[in-house]
Length: 237
Image (cartoon, rainbow, N blue to C red; front, side, top):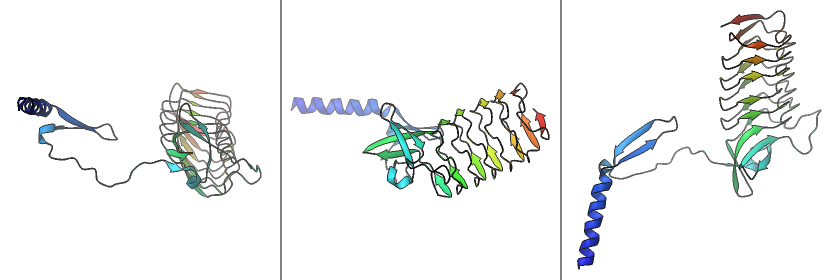
């Protein structure tokens, strides 16, 4: 009997002590919502949209996997045809995570030549898990009309050359350098906003962009030789 009373007393003390603490719920945007545990009657998780790994066979894409970092890189198909392109889809969505061989990998990189010569590609959705876009990733994607580079990307190679239909580009503040020839011969690009995080634009970065008439560039940014066409007006800000 004494043992039961002791257990009951300990449980009551634990409940009283626990009631002094707050429950903190951290939302996706970093906002913290605090509750007194004593005020919480129950916790219910309702059905909703969840971010889950997409089985690789459902993506229509090919990846290279790193089992040390548990990350995946989008790459080209083994039967790469440089005349036809790697993928034939007009619209492609890259998943945040991919499921392969029972393991979940974060998609963090778009590899070299991944979408090169994909002439049918008109739009692509890049998730905010991607941190790097390698060289020639979208070179010769002649039907690609716009690209939004997420703020997760910190390194961008020479990756959009000869995208002749590319008319809209959003470069995030996470980018510090635009390498040489990155947007070479993007003939439909009429204007470009360079974020103030960029400190260097390489030579010929926007060369042969015949329709490019205006570029807003942060003061202090170093321009390589022929970074912009001679007909492009540079507005320093």
